[in-house]
Amino acid sequence: MEINKDNIANWLMQLQDSICSALEKADGNSKFLEEKWERAEGGGGRTRVMKDGAVIEKGGVNFSAVHGKTPEFLLRDKEHSSADKSASEFFATGVSIVIHPNSPMVPIIHMNIRYFEMTGGVKWLGGGIDLTPHYVVEDDAKYFHSELKKVCDKHHANYYTKFKKWADDYFFIAHRNETRGIGGIFFDRLNDGDGMSFEKNLSFWKEVGEAFAPIYVELIRRNKNKSFTEHHKQWQLLRRGRYVEFNLVYDKGTKFGLETNGRIESILMSLPKFASWEYNFVPEENSEEAKTLSLLKKEINWV
Amino acid sequence: MEINKDNIANWLMQLQDSICSALEKADGNSKFLEEKWERAEGGGGRTRVMKDGAVIEKGGVNFSAVHGKTPEFLLRDKEHSSADKSASEFFATGVSIVIHPNSPMVPIIHMNIRYFEMTGGVKWLGGGIDLTPHYVVEDDAKYFHSELKKVCDKHHANYYTKFKKWADDYFFIAHRNETRGIGGIFFDRLNDGDGMSFEKNLSFWKEVGEAFAPIYVELIRRNKNKSFTEHHKQWQLLRRGRYVEFNLVYDKGTKFGLETNGRIESILMSLPKFASWEYNFVPEENSEEAKTLSLLKKEINWV
Image (cartoon, rainbow over all chains, first blue to last red; front, side, top):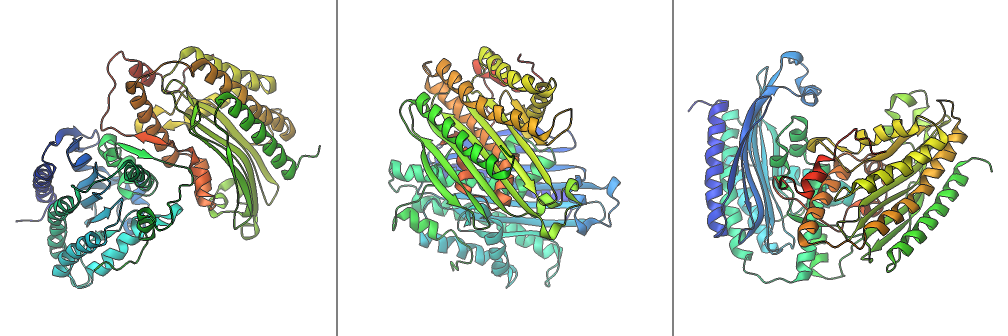
């Protein structure tokens, strides 16, 4: 099949369908509701949100494919200084997922894969999957990273190391000096290089998308029946507060959405139903919360 | 008394004391707890936080006075291109307040007044007070704006109009196309001009600080005994979500704090204890919530 933007967008819509089916099955109770939307400047999307499920309190699996005049902030980029700026058009398509579970024992997960092109033959792939456990379970962290490593290793011997580091650096809440969660993989502006053609990277990128559902379904299965108390729930709300801080202060996808007049409700579906902030909260020494905090840092080798 | 940075900082500490006393009296139950902190690069502050009061769920009245090497982002500013950049030092002091009440019938309030100077004789005053009712009560909005207008009118015939517009423009959540609340006044980089000396503007600035407590105490008195339900409470949490969006995406004080290595817990004390986000929430037609939303826009003349 020819590689072009329509084929990529179609593949992403099928991925959205299959992920929604898998998550509905794992939840066992609630279904995704779909809203189609159009963007005035070109393109649109299919936002799918589940709420108040048995496992998933609030989750979104969004597809979008937008196009139009390339926004100013992308043209400022040195890489594109050769393009004819006034006439530059862009096209961007992707699937973006954030799942906030009810139980503090089930981790928050995020996945995004995206394809971007603009006038002048510029095109690239980006994406990643990262996990934000409210309580870090070391076996789960190992499982999560090992599965991502398998996907990477199939395509390039260095991808896991490189993209794991990229996730550590990207999903970092600088003002807290903590990582958002236990990381995962993150990559951007992948075209060719390192012995990989664009076509080979596209295969890798697709497998990242396909890896999401089985990994998260397994993590749900492992943790959904664990008991918890109000104490765990309050900690979950504080960790979600950190999630909000990351997404609103640092996240480039959110920034891109806001700066390209994206659909605000689709962009901010990543925010949890409930979150909390407590002034200067410090967990008790040797508590499970303190242990989790100690693991929210870069350069932990989980595999 | 000579005008210098130490005198201004001392005056601000006294203001912090008197505001905390007034708010403790209005709350009637809880007290502010103080934490003194120091900044590695110079200066420090007194953070005072009240939590779980009878009226105030979470509130901070913070004083800080920090100094050191002028941060890069301030030197990029065209206004200061004449300063010797490598040797430039800054000093900034202010009182910053955010109060999140328990009751959705009592408005959130924010006040900040700040003094800034840097090498080369640059100095300015900034500040403002703005109100974020969960439910807009028109009489209260009129009262609030009238009191601010009185303070402004005493000093300059154009200040209320000018600074009210500035607040409308500043406390605006662009991605939602709504104002954060019903505005108030906001001003920055006030030195001299418009027939006002720096000294005259300093008097105006001090009266803004002194206006805060009586205004908010009156708004508490008017609203604290109103009854409310879970329905009102859920709306309050959604409005607080918007407050979080504003503070993390747009607020310059937050940005300044993060970029000058400010004390993060003092900066983010502005975030509420609990907040909520619901996908695509639209209030019922003709409801109190819809009425409030219709009033969250610029250029409403409240006086």
